[in-house]
Image (cartoon, rainbow, N blue to C red; front, top):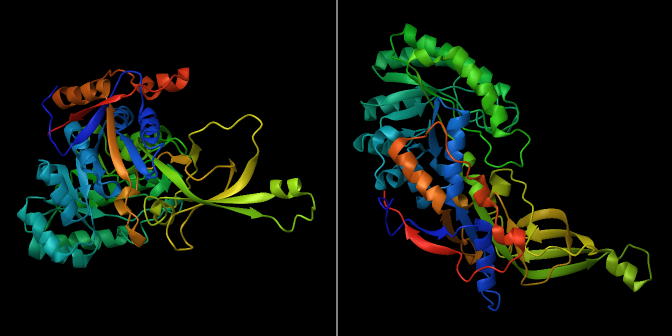
Length: 460
């Protein structure tokens, strides 16, 4: 089991009975007497292992190619590499990251339909052949700069019911697809398949059905022209947490019959997808500290009673991470976040309408507009769960505020499971490890042990 070890893939083993949440509590306790209460993450790599098993139970015919853009943490990329996932890269830098840990070019798709010429040449130089396109200009660029390219035609979808729409920017219509395939034939460019993306935060699984049907039409067009069409990429849009309207299995229960209908198992077509948030959203918990506070008394209450006036107040809390840092997901990913308190409120404790703000000097830096909270103090902590997707990857250091420190953890059973998957693949029956995420310490109310984790490292 020690076949993986590398100094730059550091994580801590969780001791039996402890969870990632316990590590959050431990880190908070460690700085309780210090003024340096910086924001930090605890990321559970074991949660990613669980998601991988769940993926193959729900989509047994679909190979995941992780969307690196979602969270490019090296520990995450290495974990998924060990598990056997492929990678969806959108740039030279992402390709370099994935190949730096030993991932072969065959496990990479350069899934950006609009590429810089120098980066097309880079992909050619390092053996990355699978790449997407959706226009004649892109087709001609690839024809001139990557003669061995295996192109995947990205088609547009009806993503009107998605939170983050993508077809306004990418994707060819069915009519345009025929013209592009004909042009590819003239240029002697190899087309191997079709890709699509229904948009992030898809709320209607039937969108996938229509997209798979459209992909079948384009496959048939390509086959008529003599192309060996053998790759279908169904993109992303899969939820990574449970606080969503449309659950993962609700989506996959619609996708599987569509795949069986239009691309049956004996058709010889390989099916891949580009999940990003699915793998990493729920594995990250962010802890932020209250650095300032403002009490706003409602002067329009009309009451002369001081106690009534005090009860008619709103509170503004300022914390040490914001929308220019981890909470950029609010602006860029339409995320709706809500705080979790580390201290359980008393049964009779009064709650006040509160807002939560980031640390920068910009008035745009608001995390939560309105939330009912008990009165908190400077130095108190708030937690934000499901913070692994499109957060750290796009965080800046605007105003000189640094990104939070990251602490990776994993349980020993998940470590063993990862090793087993590397050796034998996903087995039909795997142990249910969900109980590992319930902390014995939290359930019993016991004090945390001095050390609930031990250091470890992995090498690919």
